[in-house]
Amino acid sequence: MQQRKSIFLLGLLGVLNASQASAHGLWTEQRRGNIEVIYGHGAEDDAFKAQKISGAWAYDSSAKMIPVTVQRLADHARLQPLKPPATLAVALDNGMWSQTADKRWVNLGRSKVPDAIESTQTFKYSLAIYQPAAKLPKLDQLKLVIIPETDPLLVGPGNSLPVRVLLDGQPAAGVKLVGDYRNAPNTLSTETDAQGRAQVVVRNEGLNVIAAQVEVPLKDNPDVASRGLFSSLTFLGQPHHE
Image (cartoon, rainbow, N blue to C red; front, side, top):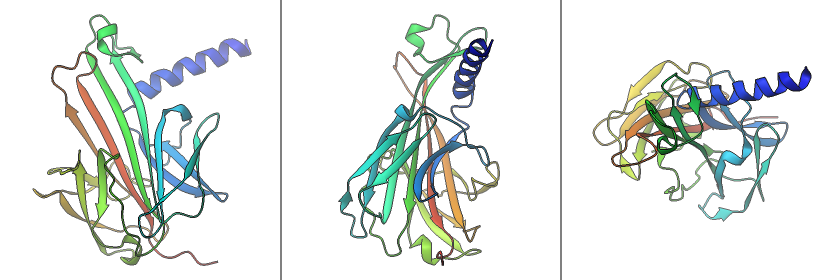
């Protein structure tokens, strides 16, 4: 009975992962002295397959790369840079999913799913700023990224942080931004202008998670009709004191 229950729960997890592929976000948090990768929606902190982490990159304050190891645990991933980073980025590839005619999601491209009515591949990215005056590296590996245009650690709660959103390296207009994804994931704060720029109010003294999400239609792709991208920018609103 226990084995049957476990199989059922694993199957249910697969369905939820597919149907919520676009709804869930990605960010990192410091927990028990570790940098944990969080996959969830607002207060939700869901288990995920650590093998889906497709890359992690850490840098010092001068944008020099620091080696980082991805520790792939049973239900999530942990990032272990060689030394404390000034900035850190992580990416997750959620894979290709297709919805069958009877509304089931399967972890396959539509070329392998007869009569698929919907198909997508989702990617999640996150950029964390840990140290003030950190020089940002090129972040070409993040296909959707929220770039702070001033030091986010010096703005302070209640003040506006200027940001720029880049999609495939180009300014992205009309992208809606959530200013406090961790606490109010469904509350939009602002939208980017024609140059991909926006002002986002810093909400918290503690961890801030600013988020953006876009859906990009694809032409002539045999497996997916769209590419879904989520990205977050995280930082502390005020310096941490012991």
